[in-house]
Length: 214
Image (cartoon, rainbow, N blue to C red; front, side, top):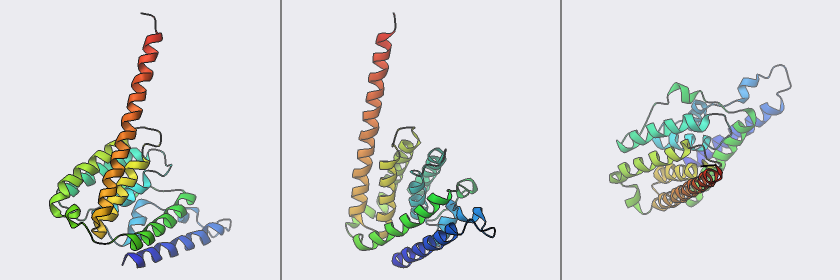
């Protein structure tokens, strides 16, 4: 199923590229070259919580003004539903309308196709204890923690927590405990990066205060 999805996304990426090359023609509508989160979800044909989380995590690293802030709030909402065992969710209209520009629409389609192709090669059911239903509350808390890190205005601070959430989503979809473990390790690296930046900020503030006359 995931292989067919990868092929469908690759086909959509090629069609987007063809429309993009023809955008100079009067018949081409520029709005048709812009994808939003709801349209990406429709391409999946699946509104499962894991798919929605993966798409939202992916979009947090796209340079769209305010995307990280808006999506982090949505990620916190997903965390609550995840912990409560909700396997499907309706996407809020405000999040669904969040759109990408022409270039990032194409990149996102190619990136999703590449990601599913690799997932089909590398991921498989194993280490089932990590994806057991009893662990849902723990992963829900982890999703909330990564969403909080994404919310912080840190330089490149979205990359590692977003990657952690993408791995979590794929690991849960494939029931691959190894992917879930790597997700946790990636998230720990994100927390270490956040802590190091916070420590650096404290040092800078202390030095600035030391220069001030008392």
